[in-house]
Image (cartoon, rainbow, N blue to C red; front, top):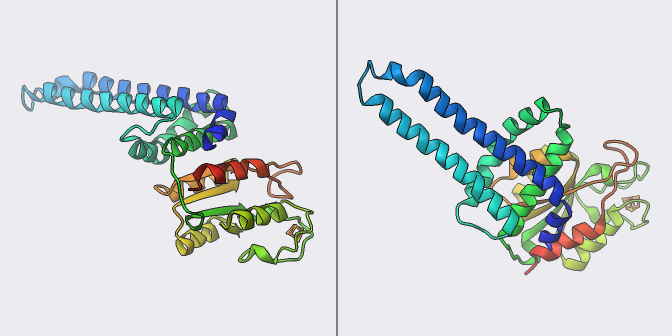
Length: 256
Ligand code: SF4
């Protein structure tokens, strides 16, 4: 089912794959160009040095390109190819800022790149075919899902919600009850990290905007996160909503 989440965002995923491939070709090309420019100077230290440095840099460039192909295959085939978990880390930690920078130069909005990154991340998590007991899964929600005039404090305990259905918190609380899954509302990244430290889940289904989901996925690594974007009909951080079907899909895809 997480495959379905990925398929729905197939086009978005394609953008990230294209940018990632371009970034890796540029890095690999840059490494070889650096060697070509600096290589002759190395021979004054030792005649064998240009060859050794060239071999090492060619190996590094080859590894970068091979890693890109592996990630593409994992995403497109939906199969967990050995090594891609580490590569997911490399993309999250190292490549994403470069990809965002290149996308900006190409005039692609940052949120579009982040949507694409989240889709790619979901594909890589789905490819692992993780199956967990309900008590190892955590649903993490942003506070902006709560109706702004509701006086009930749902951070800390979502079960205080009296299910009046003026916002999606009610439906999400019912969903968590139905599958007996831990669910928390966090007011920010610090509280989200605290909740994760306390509950120690094996997988997080997270709802947020592009920016918060991207930083959440990065902060949680290597913990797998399935990201679902919220809808913001009234603008950012105000009475947002989420497609409950997509949350249920994500839960069912990882539930043993
Ligand atoms: S559904 Fe829950 S959180 Fe939302 S307004 Fe009603 S009581 Fe408040």
